[in-house]
Figure 1: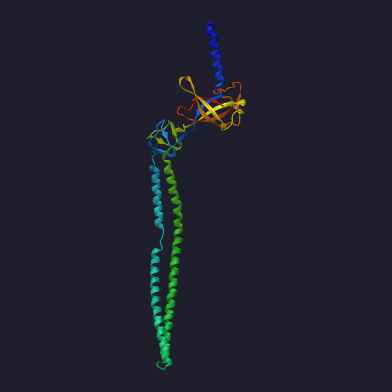
Figure 2 (figure 1 turned 45 degrees about the vertical axis):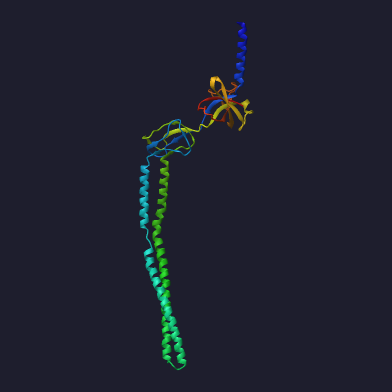
Amino acid sequence: MKKYIFPLLMMTIVACTTSETEYDASGTFEANEVMVTAKANGTILQLNVEEGMELTKDQKVGIIDPKNVELQKEQIQASLRAIEQKTNSATPQIQVLQAQINSQRANISVLQEQLENTVRERNRTAKLVKADAATRKQLDDANGQVEVIQKQITAAQTQLATLSQQINAAKENVSIQNQAVLSEIKPTEKRVEQIDEQLQNNSIESPISGTVLTKYSNAGEFATVGKPIFKMANMEEMTLKTFITGDQLSKVKIGQKVTVLIDSKDGKTKGLPGTVYWISSKAEFTPKTIQTKNERANLVYATKIQVKNDGYLKIGMYGDVKF
């Protein structure tokens, strides 16, 4: 009997020693959980979400009844069309004035031809007067005809300038009249844009890529703003939150590569690579649920280690770390 007691005692001592030195701290795994809530009020018409489902960022998974918001948009759009119909147009008046301008230009062209002919006839008469082949009265009459046509051309050109001024005045008057109406269009268009933003809130989308953890709502239920619909988390990158003692603090730094140990098959442990990415800047009392290597320590520092999930890590699962 004694020959079996000694080997058994030695195995117990070795086992105790190994358990004390195989890890430096323990903790539980966490994930960045995101609560997806309703952004609009209404009945959930569709919700294609199940617990355990993998979703990608911005993936549309459901819709909240947008009927009320769409009716508001139609009402605002109708108001916008009504405002636009109130605006005046200077086009009809401008068309009339433009026709008069064209007529005056044609009249000036005719008068200029007449002037050229009259001037030519006047010059011929002047030569005849010098040759005593025509009377002085005939020359005076020719000069009078030239002056009359010149005055007609000047009057036509003045009328042409007046018509152009009337067109500009018509445009300016209509613009002034429409300012009050047009000032209502831009705010109304902004209201349409706001409604479009609200309609986007009726779409239920995944804010991140991850796994659906819990489903709180179903299709057919009435949703209100802020009501939880489902909870999800990125399970590809897990966080092991552990606590280290003051004497361990000098051995650990941010960015340090560590080995994370988890339970595996047949009671064995499996090591996973991890990276320390956060260490608390202040100490706190040891949480009752946390075990540290130095159990006599009263103050510890919270530490977070990032670990890539190999598919076996779960939220709340215990893990050990070796620095």
